Image (cartoon, rainbow, N blue to C red; front, side):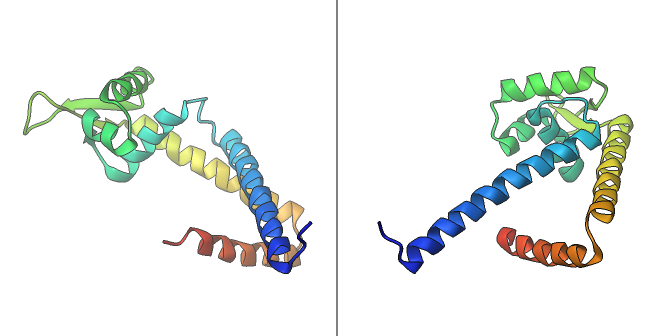
Length: 150
């Protein structure tokens, strides 16, 4: 069995990556529970976030940006329209196209969900971690930021 420092470091790195991936997944689930997204499928949540970030868009441009078939995107949009989360308006430049945008109800739900997640996480950090541990968490957040920087 090869117990060289490089091999041991590689196993440690792999184990750390697995622990981190599992922990982030659990944290995401806990945050999702706080946000009250009412069990929207991930594809619909992605559409809402895309419209929030990028502004109004056609179904075909949303499909391209999300890597979906236009028919699949149409289904997602129909469900979101039925739920009152998005609305369509004719494209002033091309009457054959419909421009989709978020409803004010949806915008308010997004704001409320974010506030609930932020509140839960702030309260959890404050109640479960000592001041020293909060400092350690702040340092770890800095390291995590480095992992995702482009």
